Amino acid sequence: MRRIAAALLAAMIAVCPASPATAESLTAQTFADRVVDWEFGEQHFYATGRTRDRLITDSWGWWEVRGERLCMLWPPAEDWDCPETTITGDTLRLEFSDGRVQTGRFRE
Image 1 (cartoon, rainbow, N blue to C red):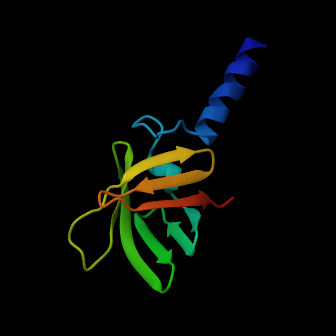
Image 2: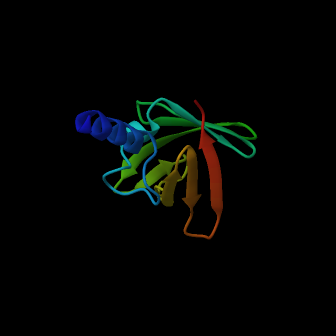
């Protein structure tokens, strides 16, 4: 019975990472082949490291996880943007260095 309870707890933790995300809870698998619905559109995170942001127009960029942050590069920019990343349940919150906050939900 304890083994079943421990397995269920481990599965719940894997599905619902702690908030804020930590280096142990935030991995490439958190985003690979998933879609986030933002207030004004959606963003696809492909396992290849590519990302497509479908807000006003289609924008293609790159993504990767660095420590406990989701980092994105949007050409023609040359610098990666690595906002503070928090995941609570299916909610993704990004807090950028300029003070912008973007909140979305992982699509099932």
